[in-house]
Image 1 (cartoon, rainbow, N blue to C red):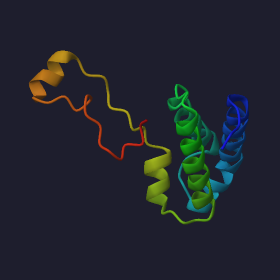
Image 2 (cartoon, one colour):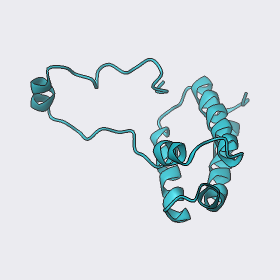
Image 3 (cartoon, rainbow, N blue to C red):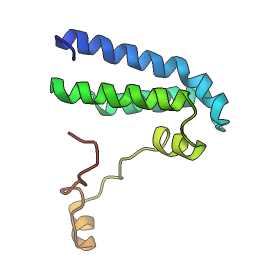
Image 4 (tube, rainbow, N blue to C red):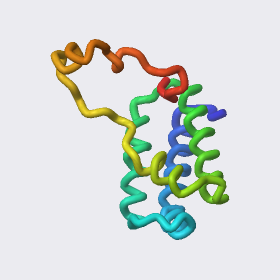
Length: 119
């Protein structure tokens, strides 16, 4: 557990650097048909998606899960499809207008699954 927000920030930056340094190894281990620069870009997007999190406990959970994910990736405990789908795929849906949601008959943006990882 980080003792301060500055220490948590340092730990996040260290974790980010670990991912960025591992990008060429990830590409070669899994024979992914993308460049390491693209993997770094996707890693940056994943970290930027959680920039708004300020709760220290949530930050600690994200750090722990992300460190575990990095270790599992480097140990080759994942399949190529996992890396391509989880690391490189954007989880965001395209923006829809009110009428588009109305015509669909449901508002899935208001309800998130319990295991979505969003705090």
